[in-house]
Length: 582
Image (cartoon, rainbow, N blue to C red; front, top):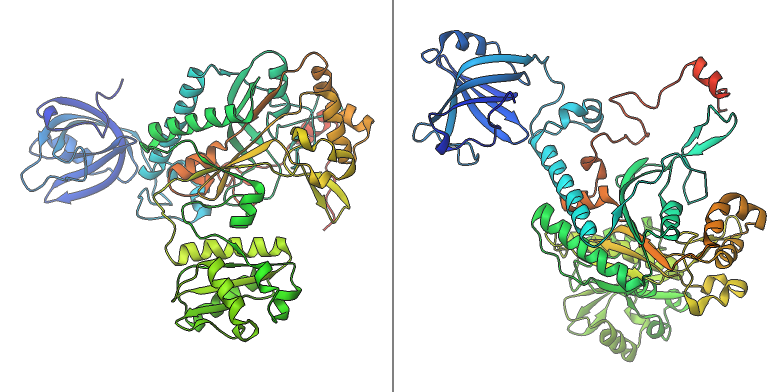
């Protein structure tokens, strides 16, 4: 090894030792001819000293060093003078007097600062990602990512799971997003797809007798990007045979507990709270509720329809929030504007005063109805009730967003807390108004609940699925399900989507063939690993924990991908570029 120690290792106990260090020049200070340099590697900083009275020749060489030069030094560790220590650094009580220097790589002036206090724009950070990744906070994030991956592997291996890789060149099957396709040179005119997930292959592994499988699987989806979405990402993909839903929950909860402890030394409480999809929608207006604060939606439809207020009487549903906080008219107008922008026709409100409920709509409510409202909402003096009246979907959507806004505005969210919950019993199908057909709400390999199988032919909208989501702090972290393991049920579920027997055989024949040879009951889940690491680090931008992410246009400014290929390559693949019409 070139170095004897790292730049975050030396302490007073190393005083008078001869050491060798490697790293990058973080900063340079010249104090009366003595040059002080902070030398940085991923472990920390060490102050090195070029003193002409210690080594004159090396002092001259040190005078040529600039930011981000990569260097090797030999020197002697000395305690810093009293009053010159830096208590913020592990190495803050020592410095290294340099006896020999070798410049391993000179640096031009960096286009971005390698400094956690100075944040460059996204474009620059991605173009010069190799410099951005040198920043200490970025290196810390990837250390957390590494620890999380090791903790997952450690726990699952202990629980009897085998890590098995599934292919990256697969058959194109409909899974909800666009496939990235790869042309075959050998089979002209045919294409592989890059996997949106290892779904079918992990199910086949269960048929193959590997009753506990996992991998940190790479997934690729050609879809529009956002903060928590990238064209390629990693998930902790896992599948188990001969299990029920509770078995999967227990494994995942234990794995999460191990990951949080090993990665950030945080103790999470298990088991996690469970809510059905219907309960979550009723109480929070969404299927990924942030459980770090208690503000819930209150259904007042039955009460307010007895009033003379036409807006409430004519609405399908009326719900409200009681934030237990009084607002002025200007603040209320801002919340009304917010709700309108989110799709509501408006937001009605009433204040709770010493005289009961007051406000512009209060005159439409009798005293008995007002008392009923106060009872059902548990509203006390000094609060405001905020109402949305509309179709149930709009009421849920608008109030769920208003709830989150109030949580932020009123500082209700316990930011330092990690709160998990399971959401279960999702609908198997959703009705697509635009295309006039049923579509899969979860994914098409999910087993319907046994008691709902009878609705597949007569009313698919009533069918609940044996599926579940894991939610953390209002973010969907994982989706999973008990899978269909019988060919006849799988064909029936697919036929509701409008697929013919011919289509089913063409797209999924290899899976259905496997089911004919004694397929076990099985199920699994796939927590998003990038998203998990981002949340461990205290935010939700997965680009910050991916080494080389794409920008919003799905481009990599650093390497210039996607890029054109040569005519020779296209010819070899039997392809021709046809320009899109604008």
